[in-house]
Image (tube, rainbow, N blue to C red):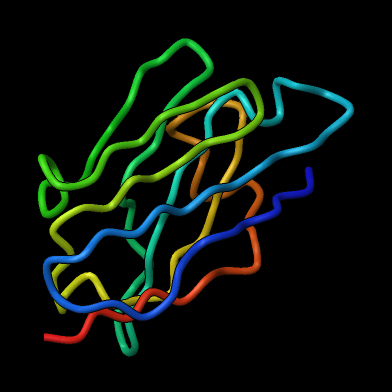
Length: 117
């Protein structure tokens, strides 16, 4: 599975950003579940939001109501609104056969999101 990420950048607190990730694989089931994780310096990589091809989605409590994940076939988008300084991290796209297997499946190269207060 190849994952190509786009978006990210540096913004001010309260601004919005949109991340996108496109998956490619000979087996579409390899990216039945897709999502975004993030890792801040010195911290573990945590789930931000994920979605399956059937539309089932998960959100971290810290982003619920501010972030929205959507999917169109092999591409997912993460709309991030009302960004806060604590959202600063490297964001990684992930893909896998199920939501439970996302952390152990395929990863993108990561994109930096920096929010200044």
